[in-house]
Length: 388
Image (cartoon, rainbow, N blue to C red; front, side, top):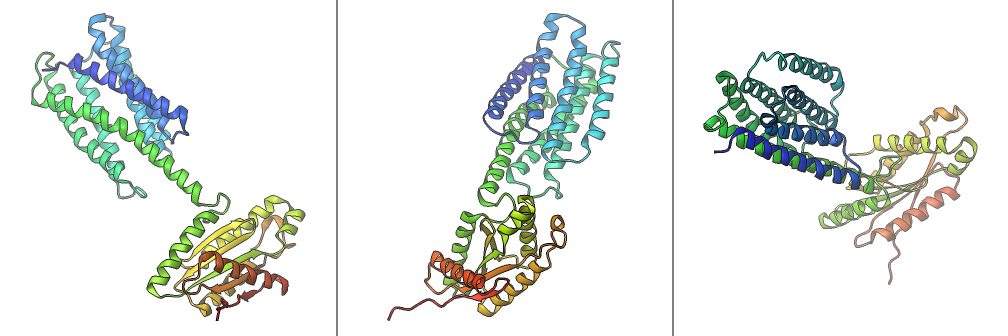
């Protein structure tokens, strides 16, 4: 049977190996929130476990204090990592005083030899098990926004193995000493649980960080950074999917091209910051006047496109007029009352078997017709010309 010191050696090597992997990951990518805390936690915990393995052979009393402090510092860093990753508000207000009290308690208890080594290990394991179970509650909480399957798996793992470690820790604390030569059922369950917890949590946090980074990259690849709307590429893809679906279901789909009037004049007179403000406010007003399944995107500059699945020509013209009116109601704080925002809109119905680029071209021509006819108006596009 494995003894406690050999077990600590295995855990220490494992945690430091995870820390090295995370350092390499951080170096080559933008780290997710909390990953630096987690890396430090693995490093401190691994070093503490190696110290727990070597301390009996070294025979220095001061190392008992260093080991106790290492356990609590590693635990505090792990809590900080999860709080930072899940953006828990004001966590420092509570975590820092609790960690400080724990450190003071460890600094007072160990030098005075108020507890045996077995009791100390049991106490530290109880604290560790409590933090692990608390992490499980966070990961499995119904309040967690858009939880991933990975987060749920880690949460279940932490709950099950945290309970096993707690059972082992309470037993060790009540007995007063750990059996250094033989491992009973509780102790073996604690060994296995601790090792599984190290593996799942070590890789799990790294995978959660990568998952979040991938989500950020996907968002940057599909959304316009300024307005939060779909960018040109994403809009074309989504609109074409909607066109194909409408074709299969034999439902109408309309397309609108929208352009903010005199946008260059706005930039020249009030500056590009006011232009950016106008784009953001327009996107917000447009989003508020549309249905959930309507597809709105920024095509570039001050030009936007809107696909409306399931909407016929009459409905599209009504929606375009609502959008025109909503735009006129926008107030730009940076311009005072010196600028009234208006838009010109071209509207077409995408014909059966008409490709999206062709429909966009027709809507674009209708848009420029609205510009030529005085701006701040909605213009209906020409029908598709049939070849006899």
